[in-house]
Image (cartoon, rainbow, N blue to C red):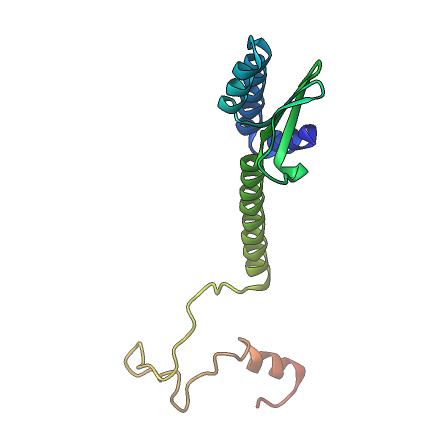
Length: 164
């Protein structure tokens, strides 16, 4: 379990996995070098372990049911320590959410650029006053149609059709 989490962290959050693994290794060194069981338990609690087992004896037990996705186990000889890694899962979730939102934003920008959802010029307002003296406003009779293609009269003349 820990190898997969470290691989995902190496891609998304390079420092988190390495620093957490180093902290757990340092705690395990302290637990292993403790002279008696009381010192081992104190070192385990100080290092963030919530369970500790020496051979077949449980020196420190978890306070309740523990999900396998929430802990990492380090073993040395007959000594095993369980460490909480739920903060790493939360960090990976946040990184995945940020990556997903960035992907959605990129896809939305691409779709908007591709399908013209962002107009290149502001839309004409209806019923505005004429910009030049003597020109007709967009909403007045005699104003050119804005949605008609340019050169339709010329094209109709070339094809021999009557203009509409």
